[in-house]
Length: 399
Ligand SMILES: *Cc1c(COP(=O)(O)O)cnc(C)c1O
View 1 (tube, rainbow, N blue to C red):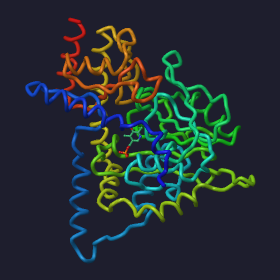
View 2 (view 1 turned 180 degrees about the vertical axis):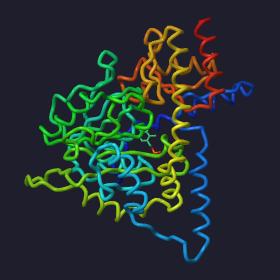
View 3 (view 1 turned 180 degrees about the horizontal axis):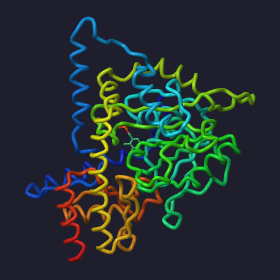
View 4 (view 1 turned 135 degrees about the horizontal axis):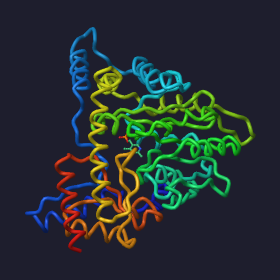
């Protein structure tokens, strides 16, 4: 018999649904060029430091003495040490290399980490949400509690009113582009410590934070080492969406309880899980990731992040001038735009595609609270982004 929990998932992955609609439009209008401000993939190529590291690693693979086969499941020490030093220790956060698990990108681990929790754990996700957290827990048959994120509270969810065992937080947020201030994040960490709950913290967009007082890691908050697992990725930070590399931080202090009430550390369980089901990220990807921690690599990836942030600023200014209400786009590559008169988001998507030939992502695809919003991404080429903005401007002013 099959796992019937799969039948409770919504029929189509959101982006597959969008791609289908865009494909149909293109077939019916072969002359028009459609610009996508929809899917969250990057457009700028890998930086030179990464490319050089890749070439060197490929050459090593060709020599008998330097060839690498299976690597350590948790990742090579050279990368884990660079991550612990650069992303944590040098920023005053207490995370050691041994607590880093290198992976093939954050989607796998944000989806897989729930395997450590019992099937009857109650899981909270925000609404709107990055679909992976909710879907992975649906597949496991868990009960999911939704935490509405509303404009009047800057899309920061309230603490759950009912008992919850795990909460997924993602900041800077996909899809709303909003951030958590230190005091907001502290409220969550304190709540988790008080209630014996865990926080699965997705910091995939940490590199886009510009304000110095916005926390880049949950471990900047006291008490987080006991309750939080953090997911990071080189995908948006360094354009690794096709190369694949990310990492998960599981501090030694994070524990959860057995049915009998004993505390069990998650770190050895995750290590056990990974060594059974995961055979490591490719040596090439890990050498490439190491290159972004060099001085020139760091500088180069920052230039690309700034390029996207400039797109985001242009988009924000233009859309606000058109009278739209816009959120995000200052510490994130996403803009969350209220549709005129809260028009249904799929209707806005269809109209913008038909009239401006620009693709957005309907907010309703991220949850009920996303209705009346669309997500635009700043990951486009500058010229395409500017062109798309002109078209939207023309469409909305003549509407
Ligand atoms: C893009 C993204 C990731 C990263 O996915 P990868 O598998 O590392 O490419 C993780 N979380 C969120 C919310 C994302 O948008």
